[in-house]
Length: 239
Image (tube, rainbow, N blue to C red):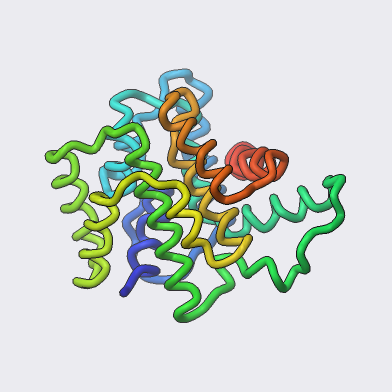
């Protein structure tokens, strides 16, 4: 499955660009997003997330489901560009401040998404994409018409037949935090799954917040680590 090709394009939509090819330039993407929309944030007029993301697949998952302006919260979606880096930094900060020094060795943590290659990166990409779809479904908003529109946008990203079928399965599968957590290939994968889910959900929506809390429990994330992961999202997009 060509999951990384599709996932990279989805992440680039967090910057409001449809550019093709190339890897993920984390600093450029996050900084560009922040500088581009500081004006909208300070004006208080809010930012229409669907317009911000170009109406693409990510815009459909985020913008159309809200049906309202998000203001400065739109900036947090730029964190999708550097999910692996942010998750690893959060772990390092948590480990430094933790009162429990009995942490697994670094080699047992797994590598960040951006450092993986080949099949390992494809597998992690599936885990990340699955987490994004599940979070987008957390408030039960995707009806038949919206699913059809979202499918059209995903088709534009060029998934192969196998990946297309897999994506459709994710729309039909039960919302099961435990099943999602079981797919995590490492502690680092668990942290990345949590970060992309935290980016996708609306904190003010009780159903979505409940989904994130269920996921943290299923991933067996210490509450302090979960807080640190969410703090990294804020730091990456407001720093």
